[in-house]
Image 1 (tube, one colour):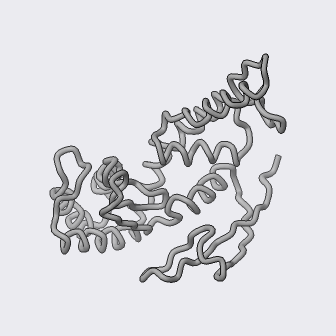
Image 2 (cartoon, one colour):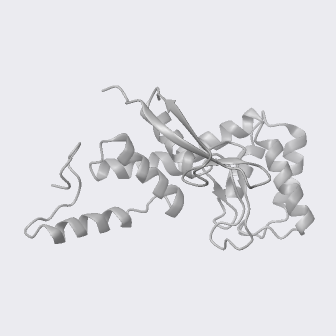
Image 3 (spheres, rainbow, N blue to C red):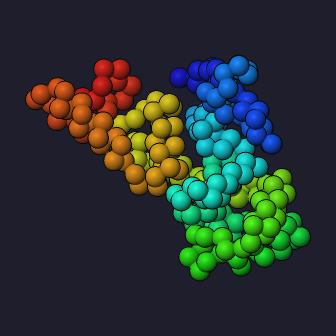
Length: 219
């Protein structure tokens, strides 16, 4: 039952001021790497990171993104969803957090609306906020905060949902984790829709979950 070695395609999107690794972009810049996870969680964490950030210091900002806004961290907490503020408050409450960085972050937290879903600072302040995040992400206390936050808010509930539906493979469970980050930890509509479609294509069946390690579909 050892986890399989798998290859991950990393593509450098080099036209940005700060190159980051993305999948399936600018295919003329490819690098294949082999990764052997030591646990299922590490595999899911790494695989999800390819699509949802990829590192503790990832900062993405788009004023036109009305669903996400500024996002930050290994799996991208969101300004608009309020998870960015929640993570930062977790960090600032860490006794081991760097005091000067905590002070800088608290300044910017005070520039959010009461709901913690919109940064109201100036353009210059927003730039400084992102610079502060790039500094904070190097603090071990911030990295620990991210690990704890994503585990509690997304990973544990997602794995529980995956088990409810009989998902036994690491790849299948990683999909539940990614969807939890995108749509919320209790989101299962995508899977219910897949089951409904399978039932419709197989008259007389009433599947409610996938059988463990099934290669033929729900049963």
